[in-house]
Length: 179
Length: 146
Image (cartoon, rainbow over all chains, first blue to last red):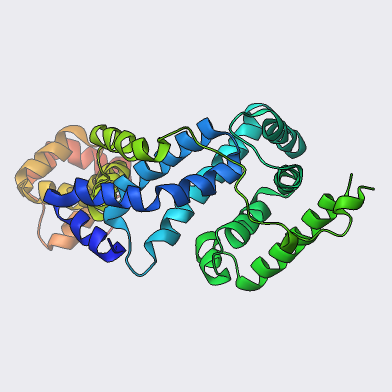
C-alpha cells in the first residue's frame, strides 16, 4: 500500500486501525534495524521500536504531508536512539568510551549476534564512532539512503554529511587494519 | 599487524547483517504494537491542544490584569467622586459645618465676602454685635477697608 493511501485511510476513523497496521507492517523492519544497529541489544531495540510506533500513532494526524513519511519515521527513530544512548550514559555516569565498551562486549557475548571475525570487527569499529557519525554511516552504508534524505532526517547539510561519512569510513578502515 | 586485514577496505566486505531476531518476531510485532495503541489516546488536534495549554498559561495574567485595571479605575475616579459628593451638599450646610467645626480667620470671611460680593448677615457670623465690636477693637480692624 502506498504511503498516500495509508494516510488517507488513517484520516478516516473507520479505517484508522487497519491503515496503521499496514504502516507498521510496511516500516517495522527498517525502523527496527535502524534502531538495533545503534543500541545493539535486541530487548532495547524492541522497546524503542514499539515506542517509535506509539509516537507515530499519537502524532500521525499532525504529520505534514510535504515531508516523506519514511523520513519522518526515521527522524522519530533516530531521536529515540539518541535519547536512549545519552540517558544510558547519564544513568550510569559512564563516559562515551565505557558505553561503547559495554556495547562491544555485547557483540562478543550475545547469542543473537553472529558473523565472521571481520564482520564482528566492523561492528566494534562502528562503536568507536560518535553516535551521530555512526547514524550517518549506518544510513548511508547499510540503508543506502541518499545524502539529501539523511539531511532531511538529521537536519544537517549535505556537505557536512559527506564529510562525516568519509571520515567515518577512514576511521573504520584504520580500525580494521589494526590487530 | 594482521596481514589478512592489512589492506582491507569497506568495499571488500559484503554487507552482512550480524544481528538476529527471535523467530516470528516481525510477525508478532504489529499485533503487540496495535495492542498498545488501544490503550494510548491519540494526540488531540494541535490547535485544540495549544488552546488548552494557552488557557492555563493566560489565566493568571488575565486575573492580574483585571486587578490592575480595577485598582487603576478606582484610583482615577476618587477625586471626581469627592467633587460630586461635595457638590451635592447645599451652601447652608457647608456654612453650618464650617461655623461649628472649623477655625475661621476673619480673613477667610473677608475672602468669602469678596467672592460673593454681598454683605455678610449677622446670623452667618453667629456672634453678637458686642462680641464682634470687641473683636474688631482687639485686632485694630475697625479702620481697615475690605
